[in-house]
Length: 315
Ligand SMILES: O=C1O[C@H](COP(=O)(O)O)[C@@H](O)[C@H](O)[C@H]1O
Image (cartoon, rainbow, N blue to C red; front, side, top):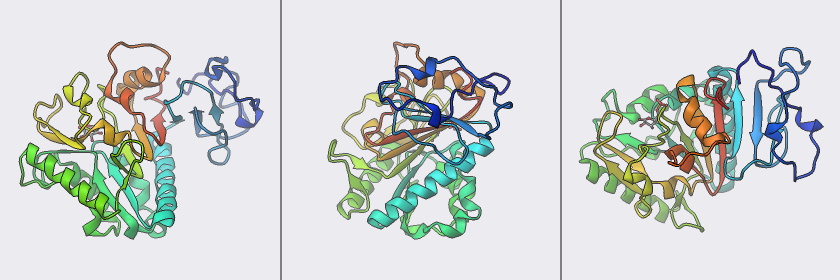
């Protein structure tokens, strides 16, 4: 897709209501974006509940393969960040009202920049930050003040700008080895499960976080789970470590797929043409023999893709 192409499909309300719509994504593209009277920021592809997401936004809800989740494609990273801010704030509000807490898991990398709207009005003042419990899906084994630290990235770009309770921010212990830090983080999670801060999946017995905000690397890695690495198959540990990460720095700790996939909600946030190929591998119709880590993200809850148009350009 590109902005110069015709790629509007149909406003949601014009779609037939039958749940058996076959492969709507194959319907020829119909209307030029610029010529249509309604404004829209995104196309929404979904396997989920039918409905319009946001005012004036066209929704294309399909009955495509289950497990791929809802996909929103934004004109720009700026538009994506506006939507991601609202999505995160809405989920925080929902879980905080339901159970008095909101457990959110951050990635490193470009994800943190895409959370910038949360540190601006209205969210910075309106969100009840006291209910937030913040975790990392992966961390590099470096001191917390090191430029490679995912904690530092999140602190500088997000956490230092919101009144989250310091005791509710669960960074890894940077005084430990990779093995030690992974064990320590898993022990920390187990305590928080016991004290009911973190829920448990009835289906899997693994911790069930309210929201995981995942980025994806250009090779299709998520967290520190890299293509072809045996760690992608870890199915017992909650947190594990890697000492030969293909992306520097080599030593990291990471949540495992059983934990990632026990989440109530996962947002996969991907921007840039350099990531279009793995996005297409995950969401396109082609078959590939070796599953990329991003293709193994399949939560028991809801999966929402936030793509800018460059990341979606091969779909
Ligand atoms: O190394 C990492 O990379 C991924 C992707 O980062 P991005 O900058 O390409 O968005 C990130 O999600 C992960 O947390 C991080 O440790």
